Amino acid sequence: MKDATGRTAKVARKTRETDITLTLDLDATGGAVRTGVAFFDHLLGSMAFHGRFRLDLEAKGDLAVDAHHLVEDTGLVLGQAFAELFAATGQVARFGHAVIPMDEALSEVAIDVCGRPTLAWRAAFSQGWVGSFDLSLLKEFFSAFASQAKISLHAETRCGENSHHMAEALFKALGRALQQAYRPAEAEMSSKGRIG
Image (cartoon, rainbow, N blue to C red; front, side, top):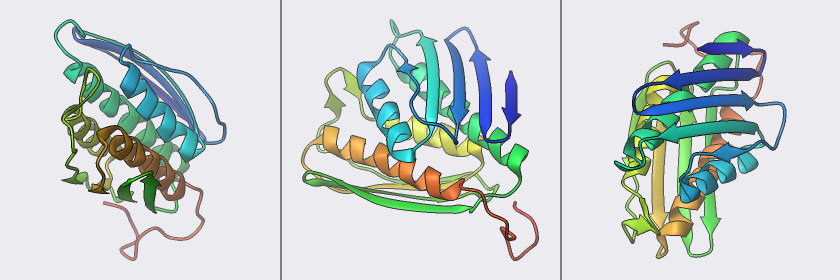
């Protein structure tokens, strides 16, 4: 199920593995994120807060297996929401970029709303886990998000010693880059005359 009006989108996805409902509002702030995976909630909440948009997300998944399906499908649904917003509004600034420090860590995200899904992933974490959360799942999230949003997405952890800081800085950078890329724009988005 998809529904986009102006700068608000609602997307729902239900499979045998996950059940996700999401509302994204680029003109509001706040919201609530509940996935059943505390660290993932923390990352998504940081992304929305620093992106200055409202994210309401309720996600359930087969966590008895592991968090893979839930994390990946959340990326799919969030990407669908951004794709729907672009389809509804037609014109956005297109490019977004942020470099965010968090203590000793520094992470970077760059976005091009170009209609050509691409992920360039250069994120290496000092520790493979934060608590019970497997950080290898973050690449699955970013890949799913880029594919459904139809954007070119570059994500990099430049440096850091604490994986929590590195991952959180990456999601804060994602939020800021999204805020820039999806702000309203009047001018042509491509010298070709069309995106894609």
